[in-house]
Image (cartoon, rainbow, N blue to C red; front, top):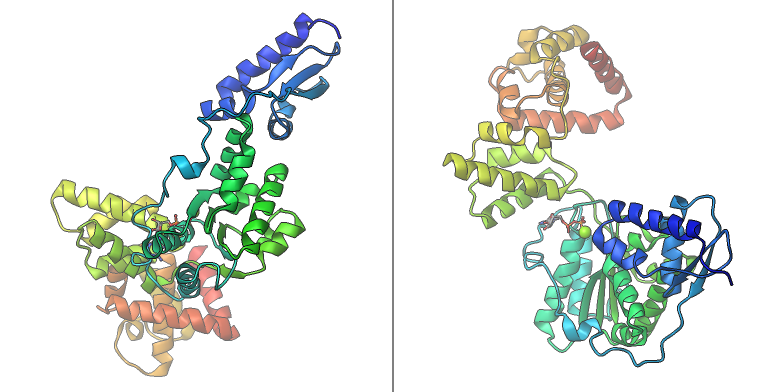
Length: 433
Ligand code: ADP
Ligand code: MG
């Protein structure tokens, strides 16, 4: 063994300095501060790590910042001193952390989430005895965490004796790391294995964390074998997660339930519910208007309500469609081409279907004018960025629900009717070019 050369410690210090600037304090404390440069061979870095997790994390995340130098690791000697008493398992220090609003009562049901909600209620009423595990997957902001906490609330309210832990995958990993540091992993393992209900959020973060995955998998098996309830959420179904086949198979043992984006009516109901909770009165016309524009993320709907509420309070006004357009413009997802106007659409559709523009804006229900009228309304909603109300009124003073109805009808028909599809495509190309 030689003494450390200047160069090696220089390299290491420079690296740490750079990382200190780049990483968050927590990350640095967790993953870099515990590593020490140790005496070793010349021309390579010998790093002393407290455990294999830190080593693995280092290799995956920081190795690339130290190119051109070989690295060897040595494990720090295990101290024989007893584990410090302050290292308590979560059971002793923390109570169940659940968002107070995330209850079943506050979860609005619709076709996209009915199934998963009833599965969640099933699990909450008979933990360990209905579906085990329950695996909930779906895109961001669709209510996965909400349902997970709702299960926690329900079990807690109905059976105070049951031991529940609700944890994110990140927290699970940090927990293990902390207990490794204080040499109390066994206690942590005992704690997890003593739970009655384990709720784990965002399991996708377990991907590429090999050692943690093994630990999770064995906790999982231990609990399932005792009929203890496990609920897991994820942004993907188990089969699409980059996890071991063994863990994927385990997660598919019970019920895999998908939660999809809510339809318009459900979005309106969620919006009104959230508004009501904030003491904000939102006319249903306005609720529809917002829900039509924000369609694939409930969290954004909520953001819209929060902004509106601040704005309305500030102006001391009721929420009108105008306020909505002014406050929420940039939240709206469709920003359709502004160049297209209803006038253009009327002209284009009239030519295409060989009817007069006045037929389209008129009231005749004859089939040869009703279809072009609906197509024009469909195109208006798709291509013109204006409120449904104003669009509808440019069709000879129709109502927004007539327009919405026409839009839905054509949208459905487009899936079945090839001729219509070609006609609409042609009109679109014409209008957009
Ligand atoms: P995810 O975990 O799927 O990303 P969250 O559970 O955090 O989504 O939900 C995002 C926000 O949307 C939360 O405030 C939640 O209360 C709300 N939310 C989602 N779905 C519903 C629903 N069906 N009813 C009421 N609120 C919902
Ligand atoms: Mg979530």
